[in-house]
Amino acid sequence: MNGLPELVSFDHDIADFTYEYEKTGYDCVKWLSNYCLDNNKKFPKYLIHTGNNVGSKNMLEYIRNFKKNCE
Image (cartoon, rainbow, N blue to C red):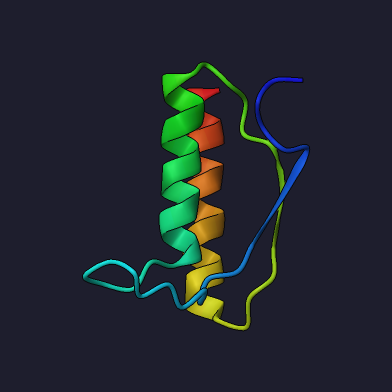
């Protein structure tokens, strides 16, 4: 066990308005990437399941860039 789930499934439009602006799946991707970097962990397996094509592309590119440059 490395403290991370085996698989993470991201949706872009999660509608979390708890903060001053809406948090999205992209925010979750960034948070998890920073967590992995800070704790020397590999990014877990993931799925992206959103109808938001732009959001999906942005999340996928962020994860690919993280894995390419930080793992």
